[in-house]
Picture (cartoon, one colour):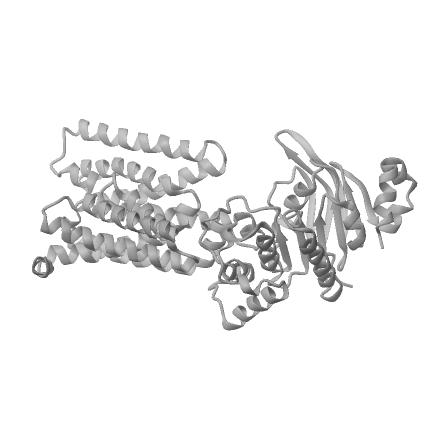
Length: 270
Length: 250
């Protein structure tokens, strides 16, 4: 197996996959802990479904989908937040509606366009092994921006996640902090599509966070553990999928699931 | 002359179309220790939340340290201990140190960083409240009384000038409750911290607070305990209840 790994590391596409995958995994882990604790975990799933429509639009107008998805998914995320904040809709209902519309619009566009040359399957379930040089650069830059902002607003994000009322009374602009969180989530979801696809990207956000929350005894540890679990699952998933010729996105999710089960039993024995 | 910490003028608050607070006028002077009491549903918590900007005002004005609430920015002058934290669950992975530190640096300008003196300040307040041994424990795993003390530490750690406490003693055993009251009285006397304490227990408030605000959707009484005890209007309103409150006031 080590020979296989050494051999795999010599390929540029594996190197690109590892770099992009690890950076995106770190973003997912950092945001995942806040999202899970704020009961926003489903938002990642909803935004991923919405991104399906934006990918279809990108393919229709012959623009690299990520450039269409980034602004549109961010706008959709802000819309979800607005709807829930104004209590116009229940939060999960708003996500459900927009998710369904996202997939429906995506399917309609694909149908009207008479099918696309590009394999839509790879956007549904991801194909990190086909990540391009441009996508790697974009992923690394955006990931660094996302992680930098999480670091900069860390204390505000913690305060808003732990006790929003107290955060507001302490002078934190809670509305702004929630917007930052949701925008960063939207960006991360779009980046994660290449790694595991629209159908599985929310698992990249939720799994490492949930596993970390089982064992962490303080907040910083929760974020660090989520980061470790996330990166380990992406690296494992890439190598396993290369060695056994399996779909990379699904393999990464399964690696996350294995970590979750291990942590669950470790916690159970304590 | 020091700035008045809180001035509430003709405050009305609506909830689902019904008026839950009506025409509240209230001037809180620096150093006051005010017990806010009243029956269930009388608007005690609503008043605190409205004053702090957590609920919208239907009409009226709230002035904090000379600034209209909407323009008020100096939140480090305010401390707040809520009735409960809505989303706190057992699994929340925050330890006591992190929760209390959040109270210290939340109102700081960016970039918000913890310094070694901040860490010392957190350690000191935990020691003062007798919970230094809990500092690495997860907040969700503590008893109700321990959690309440941690949240009090969070409210006090930045040495606020105006402290709001919303029924903070509900989860405490009698001995801890007494310690809590004595501690607050000490903070009020030595640090001149202005305190507004929501309680369902006017008798205990009579023992510790310097002024009484009795609410029942409007202000029934606001003033010193002496005035309360000698008011014929309050005798008519409370009957024997007035005597009970005043009897314990020492």
